[in-house]
Image 1 (tube, rainbow over the protein chains, first blue to last red):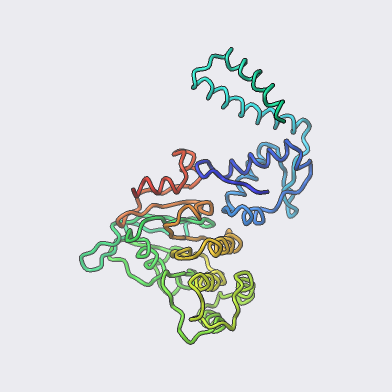
Image 2 (cartoon, rainbow over the protein chains, first blue to last red):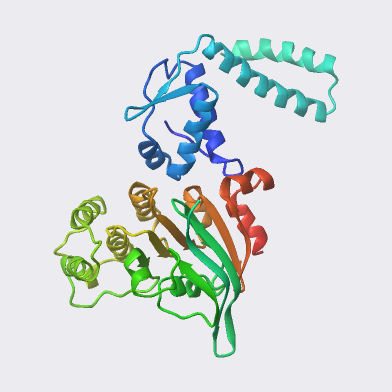
Length: 125
Length: 231
């Protein structure tokens, strides 16, 4: 897992987001083992306590589970992938809409510009 | 949470120059604390008092509940910002020196770290580059099973690849039962390994807090915050 950090934001939140993203896109699947705190800390060059915190928070939200002496694993809750996708999509859209509004677009204009851009993007992909 | 180090109203004067003017700082067990400040802000003086090399003029500093002395030196592993190797030494002599000096020196760990740092025990110390000397100093200091590690400018004058190696060694060898205090002015390279940061300016701690909470509340990196505090 490679990760470019934005040091303006708490590092543990960025690590959590990255793991959630990997689960939502099924790079990580239910019951996959996550790297140990130490391994991941060395790889990302962050404090082991920061990783511990990211894992703990993910566990609190039921996204991962820990087995004593075994490690941390991706949870297998039903609908988790969909839930994570919805959650992340909402974040993307909220920030998009907020920024469009700041630029002075009305709601109708935002919807229109999305429809227009979707067609343009489709031609490129 | 247990505090391994506690400094209260710590002052130190050199004749009429005041290096520390009532510095307050606590370090919890299991934490890595960044002591950040420009040259001449009092960082090294603070660390030297903690290492038991200097006496405070007033105020107090306790390590594991005791004033710096024989006991605290046995649980503090100190990396000074100066060079202390003797000219005739080979790396293996420096290792032997540390082994003789400190009961908590772990030879096995030293061998692992030397390999990790790609240092040859038969090299003569005076032939080492600046980066290699820093790597050797860090190897010696991290090979002790100390409760508190004090690293004064471990990245000073070291090129970026050696810097990465040094950071890796610090992260790999840090144990949750110990604590670390690291001074630097290269904040950007190292800010992600700090639990807490303390900004020292003109002999006083002007800001101290959890690095993640500071990022969240200030919406800034620690590096940016540093530049703002010391502009």
